Image (cartoon, rainbow, N blue to C red; front, side):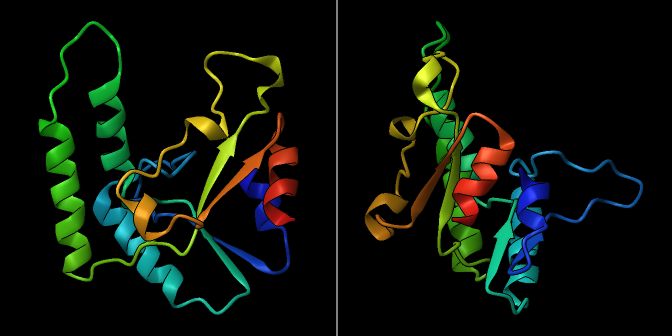
Length: 153
């Protein structure tokens, strides 16, 4: 999907830089807070109609939030979530990154009804909900090509 988006003439795709000798990250969204902040700073200097950044400085916060509420039989406290949220907030306050103008959520079509599929109704923006309630775009599609078409349209 990212390759299709990157071929568009008015879209620049910005990924986290790989460490020297390190492997490329397929999804990039799990890049650490520092890598995501660095990627967003690089993207801020690009002059293009649209810049898509594949690293999210709030990824660790989102993972900890999901783990805290996951029904797995294991007790998950809020400690990890609070730690990740505090780190992200401190980094943001230190002006290490700005939050993106929009968040893009890739979702599979819910027509097949698979339990593991991401559906737009399952997405929760958490603390950003009140700050940017209209800044989440959902690109639904069963295939990467369909998702790229939804994003580009």
